[in-house]
Amino acid sequence: MGKIRVVYNGVDPQAILNLSQAGQVLIERLGLFSSDLNLLMPVRITQAKNIELGLRVVAQLKQMGIKVKLVVSGPPDPHDESSMRYFRSLEALRLDLDVVDEMRFVFESGPVLREPYKISSEVVGDLFRASDALFMPSHREGFGIPILEAALAGCPSSAR
Image 1 (cartoon, rainbow, N blue to C red):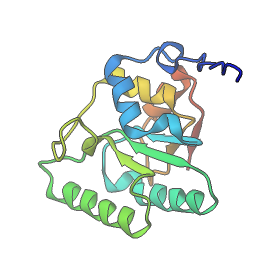
Image 2: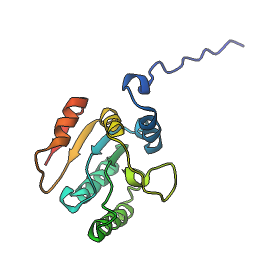
Image 3: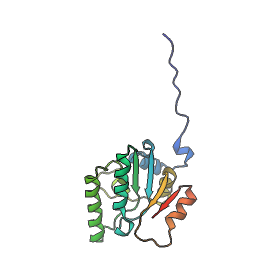
Image 4: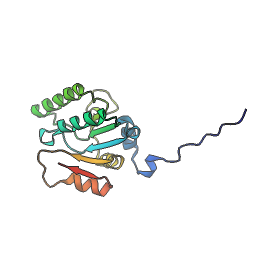
């Protein structure tokens, strides 16, 4: 019987993308390295950001057989009842569209289940570098800082 040679993966995403330890852990938790397409919305959870359109786009991509991840990096405002209501409506829509695994809120993706999770700007940078495109279906935007950040990270942008 012959020997079997194992060839190990020669690419280390953490080193190539220059990810922080916290970013690497979050990216693995979100499953970004196992998807075909990673879309990033580096926004707070507010109605102006039109996150529900993002959910519908993800559902369509999933139906097409694409392994997609959409990540919203910002939290809802816990002190604003309407912001939390909007977040809950997005959770319900995500469930209705059957995209719970494909659409992830960083806010709920921390190491402790049911504990709000906020990330540093360094980890947001890690998410930009691990994403295939910035996705901004906002109803309205100001100056567009996320587009500048995406450009600096080498992440293509798509604005509505």
